[in-house]
Image (tube, rainbow, N blue to C red; front, side):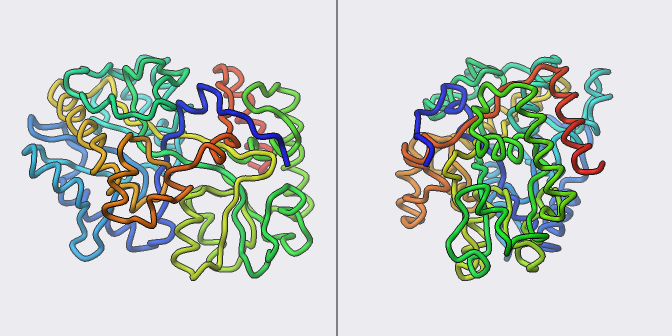
Length: 390
């Protein structure tokens, strides 16, 4: 087993987000919920004085199937009088950015007052001047962010971002097909999984896990090391081991039986296990896993009212009791101090969940893929796409 080590400051800064991609499990129900809410909200039109428009990933928020509402969001509106229009518009970071990039560049309203990009994409928004700095007076609960998340390299003082949820990347598998579990790359590429392996379209997770398995420190990875890992993945695809490189929908392959092993996300695997009588499992690789986060940010194009309302909403979700309610649904790493104690009141069995509140031992084996320069980001992403045959 790889020697365990403490998380770097940057890794700790990101022990924070990424939605429970529960839409892949909710199927049509998830899509229906998104459509319902968007319809009720009247679309992404210009923000009114008492409105906030939030763009997020599919079912990344507590959802009540009976009422077809988001309980915590309903309570926020009741408490503040602010109408929250919620849009499940994220499927992929690059895809979403591509949709709003031209408007951002022109300074035109993009239809959102709060958006939720993953850390590396949040860094791009900040670098290009597409975010607004928070009014600290509107977010007093900012002090509740975990110390480990308080100073990411892309926003050292958390002036423009706050973690939404945190996600761990590692191995997921069908227990019946892999009774001994999967802890190494050799386990992943075992004979019983040939042609039934799926890896993530999120480059930093898939290549990150491969690199760690090759003994590379992803906080300092070089271009040669990265390209070597990409070549490794490309050969596994061409040799018929990897059946697909997928986004949120990879869980469907597991449930259908088309996949028996994946490089996947902790929250998804928790849900798959709980909803399929323990048929699936997840583990951080012996060589280490990845940690990444999604961030709540206010676009540069949001109006003054939209910004103020967005800040109030962000502050609300940093109340420990509210954060615990969300975490109980999404099952990703919760970034808010005090939420674990609140979880004990509403779902005691989840208060000890490594998926939501990882112990120091687990955290010590999680790694953040280093920040890339704009040139590296372009070149490395192209190489990753080409390896998939795209």
